[in-house]
Length: 161
Image (cartoon, rainbow, N blue to C red):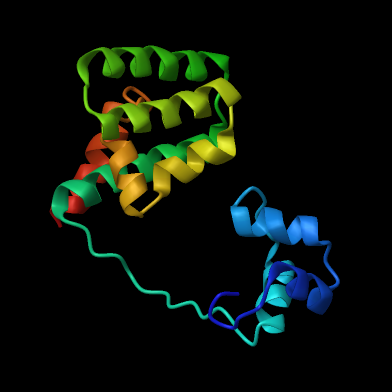
């Protein structure tokens, strides 16, 4: 909007969307669906282009990502029961008692939110997120014990190749 000099009111008129909704999109309180985002951007003479390419990670970060990806896949097959959420909480409590620093505390709070909400979707996202935020979250992961030793060694064998 800034680059085109378009106000929220003008964008509302251009798209037919309520100004209150535009305001919530701009403030980050609401995320538009893909069709709505396309409408908003088209109204501004813009579009989103995606570039898909592999993310290169140093060995330890790749190892952590692959292990957590395996956990995500396993949970996708079997789900997570109440005992699994309780294990995560115990692991989280243990990690929290040994870790200090604002970044780690923020990420522990994010894990705590996932556990409190019992959000399988947010859990999967945290487990496979390749962004710097996802990498930082996995540094204080409460997922110890979710893979068997054979599953863990299988992932590690792939990394050594």
